[in-house]
Length: 151
Image 1 (cartoon, rainbow, N blue to C red):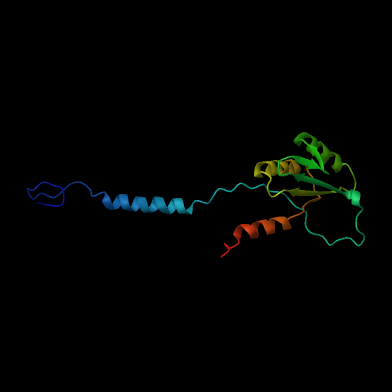
Image 2 (cartoon, rainbow, N blue to C red; image 1 turned 90 degrees about the vertical axis):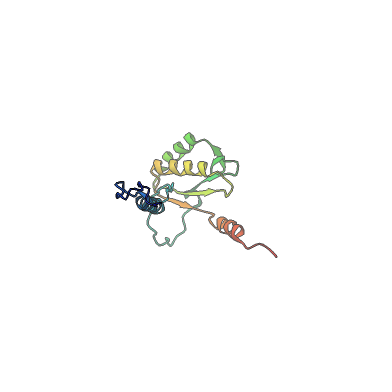
């Protein structure tokens, strides 16, 4: 009995063997899936270029602080605000010359969605004197998460 799938009368098989074609297509499909870049969600913020610090420290009233609490409450200088009030405050600071520095400090337990929305509001307001504060808390948080288990 013949393995070609044709008839036993000795005539050549006229159909194309598609098994190697299917194998090649599966390999190509896997290669395309592997090479597709991972979709990342990022908020692009144009941060100012670093400049040397001035010789005279700025007065304390030249800074405003926006933070996100663990319960996802947005605060402006430790006063709770909603997103509309935050935008109003940011636009009001743009009228002050020189522009006060805006410090942003999200809590490590705050929701990513709330933090991303606040960053989008800040970016949309046109604030140029912007900086993150309190990032050292995230270093400790990530070290604890990556620490080897205790024996």
